[in-house]
Length: 163
Image 1 (tube, rainbow, N blue to C red):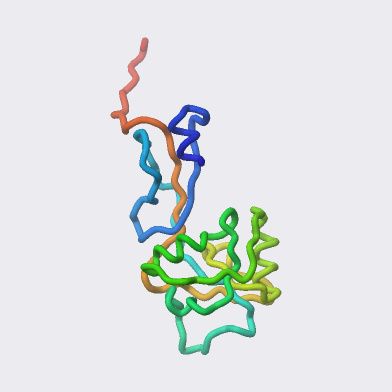
Image 2 (image 1 turned 30 degrees about the vertical axis):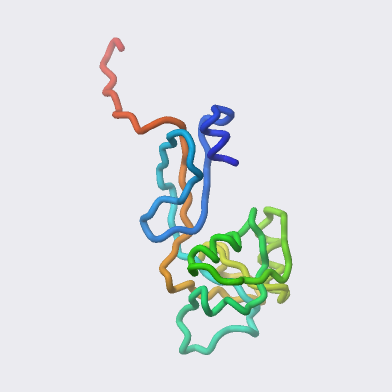
């Protein structure tokens, strides 16, 4: 939706985010040329009910560990279920509840109340009362934010006095 708005000129710039391998750009829909600039990248954590905390010996989770877990499907607020399926190479991840909002406080409250787990950037998942953030470890994935603008990359022209 945002890439299409930038491509058509309805928006001059756009911000997109999602799951990616470290230092890899996000996968964007095919279309006219877009230039992307990485803005932020941070580790992904699984936010789950505190009483479901893995043993202290577990330092992280992988998507396969989450295959049978109850998930919050919140495509506009957290990493979408489709991204998790892609990162895990497929699989039938099931949704316990769909949240169509964008408010992160509501989403984290739903996870802390036991309605399901969510994949979130570490900074969002950390410090939620009643919940715990466990790192997603394999495959290595990050939450990446990119700035989009239309057209192919251009060389910067040096401005001279009088130009």
